[in-house]
Image (cartoon, rainbow, N blue to C red; front, top):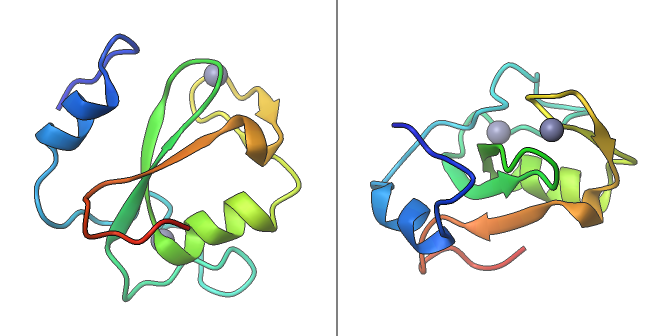
Length: 96
Ligand SMILES: [Zn+2]
Ligand SMILES: [Zn+2]
């Protein structure tokens, strides 16, 4: 699936199906708060490149409320979490 910075959130949501793995599954559970039992529930959108990553609820919660900063996965710029957007991938997903 190719996504560009011009895609709207609606396009992103429409292109997603039911369950996706968390993109941060390489992070062990524990300090990073990735939960291997959870599918991805949020699209994490970075402020510089518009890069998107699917993350599980536990990881999204950690990134939004507990991480000091988040690296862009594309250009490796560092931003505070409040510059990122966390978009639920489905209307069934409760907000963070
Ligand atoms: Zn995860
Ligand atoms: Zn970037």
